Image 1 (cartoon, protein in one colour):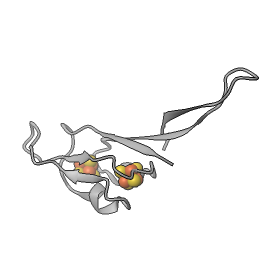
Image 2 (cartoon, helix red, strand yellow):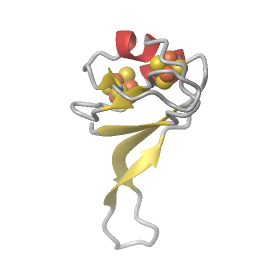
Image 3 (tube, protein in one colour):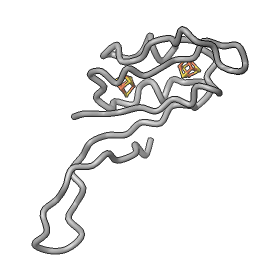
Length: 89
Ligand code: SF4
Ligand code: SF4
């Protein structure tokens, strides 16, 4: 399953926990500091599965996870479509 994360880099403190926990190596540390002087985590989105481990471990709660899942058809006879759904965890 494909996933995608969005990190609020201005609120990230660059602790690196999300990088350590990501099984796919999809998160890197930015070379540019944020306004608070931290070097924030950045998503490369490569190989992200949407497992949400990064979001769960982040002490600042600044990671949003989206997963590509089948969106149920809203009307009978209509085909389901693919879309990125925000993780509810
Ligand atoms: S959702 Fe999972 S695979 Fe994607 S960046 Fe976070 S820890 Fe890595
Ligand atoms: S765990 Fe959160 S605060 Fe720490 S580097 Fe990752 S996004 Fe930033």
